Structure formats: C-alpha cells, structure tokens
Length: 485
Image 1 (cartoon, one colour):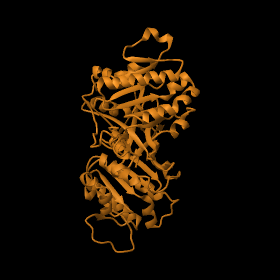
Image 2: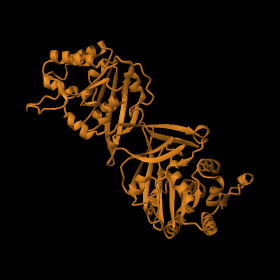
Image 3: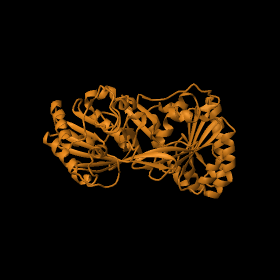
Image 4: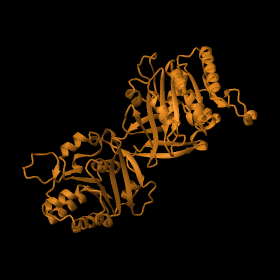
C-alpha cells in the first residue's frame, strides 16, 4: 500500500526550508514575483516571521502600515512596528503615523538612510524587504529597464552581510532575475472556477531545491505551503496512535452520518445523508492515499456501533486495510463490526480468511444478493445504528465486466437509498461506467494529485480546492481538509 501524507508547513515558518536556509547564511538576494493577488506580500511577511525577531526591515511602498496590521492581524505578535517603514510616495500630505517613514525621491539620500537604519539594527544577517521595487522606481522616475538601482541596493545590503528581497509586481522573466541569487514566482490559477495557488522556485543559488513547484494557501491571511510525502507500509503504518481527532457534530443521527471532517460536514449540512449513494472519484497518481479520507468516518462509525462493509478497491488487500484500522481501534472491535467482501476465485482457496465473506465470482447478481443477506444478518447481530458501505467499483468492473455491472446498477443504488446506510462508490477517473454511476449519485467528490499534492474537491455539491491533511502530534492523528484560499 502506498499512501501520500500531506501536512501544512506551519512551524517554524510557512515557506519552504530551502529559502530559510539561504537567508540565514546572509549575502543572499531574492526576487518574489507574481501578478496582483498571488500572495507576494503574505509571503514577505511570513519570511519576516520566520527570521530572528528584530533582524528585518520591511519597506511598504503601496499599502499603509496600519492596513497591514488590519489585513494580517497575526503580525502584531511577530513583527514589531519599528521593523515596518512607510516608503509610500503620495501627493497628499501624510497623516501623522506611529510608523517610521523614508523618502524615496532621491536615490543617494534613500540609500544613505537605508544604510543607517540597517546598521542601527545591530544584528547579522539583517534582511531588507522592499514591497515593491516597482513602486519605488516609479516614484524616483527610474525606467523599469534600468536595473542599476537594484544593483546598488544589492551591493549596499551584501556589504553589511545582509539579505535583500525584492517584491516585483509581474511574473515574466526580467533582467533582475539574473542579478539575484534566488527567484520565486507565485501563481494564481483558476481551474473550473476553483482557485489553485502555486509557488515556483526557479532558482536558489547554493541550495538544493527539493520541490520546485509547491501548492500553497493564504487561508487565514497566512502563507502556508503544503508538504506531501509518501509513506510506505514499513514506515507509515507501523505506528500506534493514542487517538484520532474527530469532530462530532450535534446532528440528528437518524438523518446524517458524520464524515468526521468538520469542513466537509458543514458543506453537507451536517454529514452524509442516510439513504445516500456517494461517488468518490480517484484521479491519476492518487494511489491509495484517499483511504485517509475514510479513516475518521469508519473509526467513528465503529464507536457508534454502526456496521461497516467493504468491497476493497483493486490492489488493496484485506491485511493492509486491517493493519491501518487497527492502529487506532482494537482488532476484535473491527472484526465484529466490519465485513470484508472478496471475490471467490478458486485459486485463492488456500488463502481463506474467516473474517472475509467470499462472493460468487461468476455472477454479479448472485454476488449482490449474497452481500445483502450478509449485511442484513450482521445488522441484526450487532443491533447496528446504521451502515457505511465502501465499494471499489474498479474491482467489480474488472471481475464481472461492465455489462453485469450495468445490469445491477439501478438496483444497487435503489437499495442504498432505501435503507439506513451511506454507500460510497470508489471509482477511477477513466472507468467506462463512471458517468452512469455519477448520474445516479447524491454527492460526487474527487481526489487528484497536482504538483505532488493530494487535492480534494466536490462536483456535487460544488466546492473549492482543499488538500487532505494528515498530521501526527503527541501520538494523535489529525485528519482534516485545508482550504486552498
């Protein structure tokens, strides 16, 4: 089993380590580029937060310093007012401000004042951030094609063993890219109405770039990049968790089954409806990572005495699913309240497991009738409060063929919607029967991988992009959805 685990790059800073490593050495120059609304200012402020307190100067050339504190409330705790310098040039006399200001009309005076303020910080390396260089050049009447001003700034800062970061209000290749040590471009893409934010690390002289293209979010006015790694069975599944973070909602249990992911429950109005048929579409390169999505819901269902049945998707053996579930719940609880269905291939006779019910391998109709009998008997046996079913449609299509699957589709969906169960049909993106199943579903959610990041979104109901977060702290597993805002 191959699982992709994604987590938020929160601490000690929300941007990639490579950038921090370059800046902490000093003598480094960086360009942050991007069109309006891509997150350049948020990243610049996040960098200040990540650096030692009192070691940065931030020149704001477009936004009132007071507005920065209003738009980014978190900087009050992390960025002292004396670190922010008002370098705006306005035609209207400025109102009295508690922030220091600097005149950006004369190059010589400007450079002299900057030098003095950096020396007064009395720290190394000091980092100067100019947001944005475009506005200062315009105020000084410097042509955009003339980069001598930037060259002078680089020489000034590096003479003090410091760093300089230029925020540039464009995304094309410019001459400044070749003068600096690092270039980062922020992009904001719209895909079917969903916003996706991407950071491209185009160069970082002297640093090995681990991931050159990273998805990030500006959720809660913070810059947080998303880090995803692959956890193999040997390393990612052999730990024992004390708990899994659940988000119980005050919903009518007769009507809804909680996903145990708070944001998703809010989208669904409390959870998945009982008597619902739901499609989970798996895109290319997702692998088995979507299993994290089901884990909190299944664990909660077992604790609430619900019955869980699974027809595992193709390529996911019973033993590995049991191992994943048992890192949180006792094995005897899982065996008593969970039914695994497998296809009764003669060649597997010697591998029989008493916890698996083997379905007819030739007739899907007979297999469906068998499973319904087993589910009904199990409900009565444990006196279940509801049922969750997870069915790998790919396994059914590969075994029985699309015509047999079509022949029971309406009956399958009707049975699901007529009972007290929530059924999840796990389907691969390119399966031939996908559209027919989707048309009969109550909800349709998609997992896909972009820029090495596991993304989640809804088609019915429509949602923005999220990433599925799996984090472990103090032996507690947190599973949640993070909006890509």
